[in-house]
Image (cartoon, rainbow, N blue to C red; front, side, top):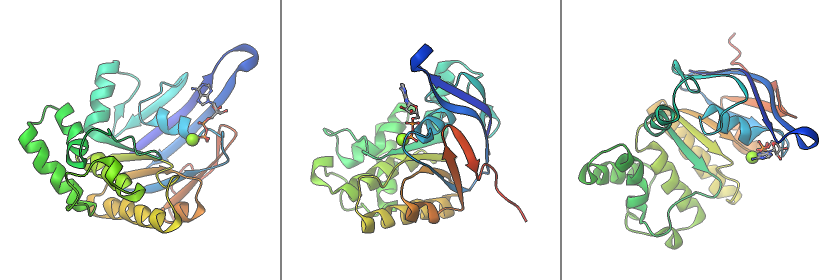
Length: 228
Ligand code: ADP
Ligand code: MG
């Protein structure tokens, strides 16, 4: 479960201060796939970065499966991120000089897994996203949709409990977007991974279990699962 309480995040000071998060509370249950939507600049990326341990809030608490993300040293937080979470970005963030297999193996290498074992698991992850035939391709040799699949394989290769995705379909056409969301949905259902997707795309949001709406640094609806 992901729990956020009274998150406040500001950028800058004085006249140029931006209040990106204004006392945000949020609960996401393990195994949910939720979307975060709202106008550009309302704080979606900031919220994702604060939840995921990338950007420390000014105040407030984030816990992920009982682990209090900002009550530990930076090192421990980084280790937690690498071990238990995966990231997917709009621009893929793959390393251009590495093959698909090498890109996907990287998080495992970071965790100290032997390169032999990492390659086996990376191949399995690429097969899971339908790219078993493209193990040795470089990012420049793959389409946008294929590169996003590689990025998703990289996110799942460590079997994380949470995947954070910031506009994962923002650079893709409608059909490809649909396939990528379908893939995330499939991972959510088969692996039980909690998935948090920031999106502009109403079609992407509608595929999720829940829509969290933000406006001007606040969540205006969907902060908790409604149980009947
Ligand atoms: P969204 O992802 O919803 O478009 P962001 O979370 O990126 O919104 O931004 C929220 C607000 O915080 C915006 O006003 C943005 O300009 C500001 N902001 C985001 N990151 C920074 C930063 N690193 N420095 C200064 N202002 C920032
Ligand atoms: Mg953003």
